[in-house]
Image (tube, rainbow over all chains, first blue to last red; front, top):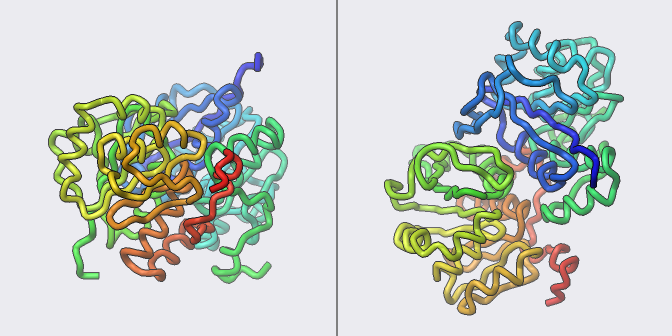
Length: 207
Length: 207
């Protein structure tokens, strides 16, 4: 590998969900020559997860370089962010030139509230799906999906679904062999079918 | 629930593997009335993961209350810890009265080096398995296992295997309904068979 690694910027906020972040980040980190990961928070320093435990952001929102690939997780904090116009304005401006905007779980509610999914197909956590789709009627919400890829927007279903989306993203960016090597190192069995979604059924979404 | 939550103490160290910790912690945190989670580090404050990102320990080794349930992750840092007699002595004393000692990935190498798996069956990461079993010949190392339960010692295979072990632990402690509720909320499909281990085959362990 002589190519420069692609940069992936993970947005942290008070009340982010741990596994939404660290499932994908674990896989991305197992391809270190290909992806460099940075964590953006309200300011550099500790950010409290939904679970309480704090994770250190390396850069604050105000000083973060515009992203190449961006990932926003879900978590209880998204309930506040969808109404936080200051945050949503920053997010819109910050990701304007991103090559790829991705979300896990209710992270897509925040993207939708910012208008960043207008005209796109997208999915989200199934337990929270009715709340999520209230955030925008300009999104084609897909209830039965492990994740949805639509051009430069990739959105996943709840929590662990982000791991499957991350594996698909590695395959898309760097090929199946890289994705397979990473998931083997992580000793994880991946769902490769984006329409696999038993949780849609559990939550009563038949479509 | 009127019972007091069980306490689970997660040991952090420089170079711990992110998903080894946050896979199980995500599941444990989805049963908040049943499990209280604390993070023990060299000192209270930021601890660097194998991936670089820092996570805040709430308590230092020297001041941590003796654990009820304990979990130690793997990661690059375990290569150093197996030779760190100060750490191993502290660990032995600290967990002496724990009701349950658990590990993910190469965390079992550290337990073995401390003598805490003497006379037990145990497993570990398959890519690192030959190194791990050199840490003690008093352990019955099981190559083909997603996780191994042996009395008050539960050890899992690499990285993502900790999530399956955590689900089994929730079922063991609180019943199948609780485990099912948690894994449904996490939108995760769990392996319930502790002998499921395609990664043993990939790494040439036929036993």
